[in-house]
Length: 124
Image (cartoon, rainbow, N blue to C red; front, side, top):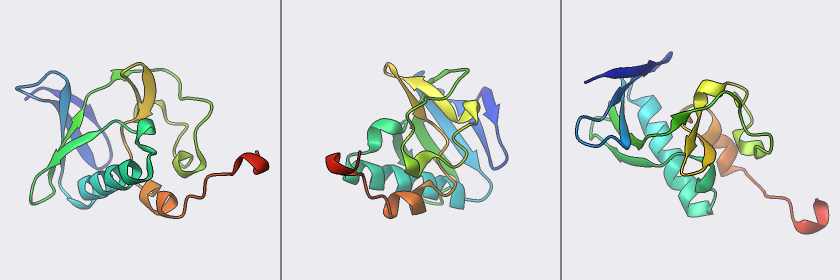
């Protein structure tokens, strides 16, 4: 497999059978599991349009398949509060289906998302 990125917790490879996917491999499965759980919760809450979708996770959690995005140099300006920590790091964002979305959300986004209260129109 061809290595395309490496971070503090995971290595990211091209998917050998699908050029639209990547494979994230983690020594500690916590990071992949957290990312998959965050994806599922964001999907349930209708906030998944900010995240690049996770496709599948291995039973041991060490391998995660995610849709692939294209490199960007800047992050979006209108990031929701639950995505703000670490949001200024451009490598955590990719262009995906015409929108800049977060591809690396294995940190504290899930906890912030669990407590997310969107502002009502009267508070904007």
